[in-house]
Image (cartoon, rainbow, N blue to C red; front, side, top):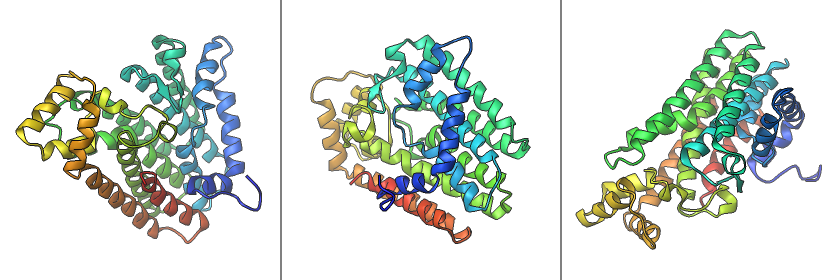
Length: 333
């Protein structure tokens, strides 16, 4: 990437604008994931953290803080905290989902074992709490501690809702708000809070993160049925094989004929899948416009995120965050 051409994609432009802060975050992550007594901890953590993730969540903390004029050091601690929480949840998720790929690479539980993934995830959660205490801001601690609980709650809700055809779009939204959007909104809200933003500014950045996270997850669910493995970092159709009732499926089930519903009961509720079922599922979603309807929902949430930013000061970072919301949905094209 040349100095003359910082980046084309919004998250790359954001990374370029926050490069010094992100360097400090990466340094802190490496320092805090070290373990004097258990070398497996940095091995497992490095496998995931160094896998080339976009670091979107820590960048949201930094952008929110800088957008509101923060000049202190603690946004770096909060950004590292958010990345540790995110990485811990990924380690646990891959065990729960029995996943084999993450960010285009074999998962930690595949390379090591489930015990290592769970215990290293626990270690990273503990490290996250150590980090979030250091700024000495109770409100920030409250935001991030609540997000950690909400994420776990969302994952448990997904366990009960994922293979139940009675799951509605409202329940799906509740799951998404828990497992994905909670950390996005905690990132932007904590960044605003550490910067001493007004209540209106803090709420605007919370609303932005919440809507961005929902749009992001809907798009992820869509990409599972139509994205390349390179883009999504896992195998296309993994959600179907894991019998996850994501938004495109919920929309198709809502319009299903009795014969189509019997198909969904077999492949999702009973888990009796055979060759050609994924293709048939895609055909049913296409027939009922489920993919297009889900994409329209993602666009609506991206627009909500962009509208929330209008309450914030005019700033290049505000424009980048707005562009990011649009880009999240453009990934489907």
